[in-house]
Length: 214
Image 1 (cartoon, rainbow, N blue to C red):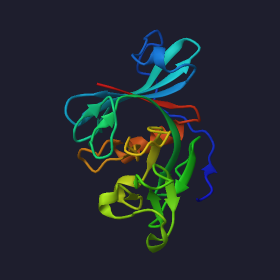
Image 2: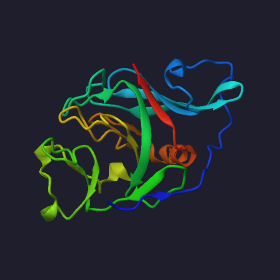
Image 3: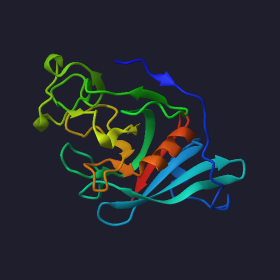
């Protein structure tokens, strides 16, 4: 697997848009986290994203009302391969990747090409992980029906890995990302405008969380 590159911290330049005394819905569920990307369903495959920073005074919304797309079947409490729904809950944001060069930020970043895959083969020991191999040499099923994704696609110009099914239980779903939107519903990911995503990526630091609710 490619070495992961760590870039320096860059913060969103937008001024806070909410009073720090405001208590967001996720506050009791995120422990000591200081950065949270909140995703709230808006019906169907639509959602709104608010980006929060914890300060000494409380939570500040540094961005609010970002339009986003979620799963074609909306959101679901449990994830399963093929259910086309975005999982409800609180998840880590583990590392970033994309076909584009590293835009900077605090998360590790992998620039991907046609040899990068997200293993969706439920029989594979590396299920729900990024792998690097030539298609003919991959030790897992890369066929379209396997659930495996080649990461060299426009929707992955930039992406951040959501820590869903970190136990890698076969069938419980994988390949959940925040990624560049193509303008439509996703297979379960959270998608937004690429420019906005890059701003968020530059702001993110290790320990950031994504919180998803209906």
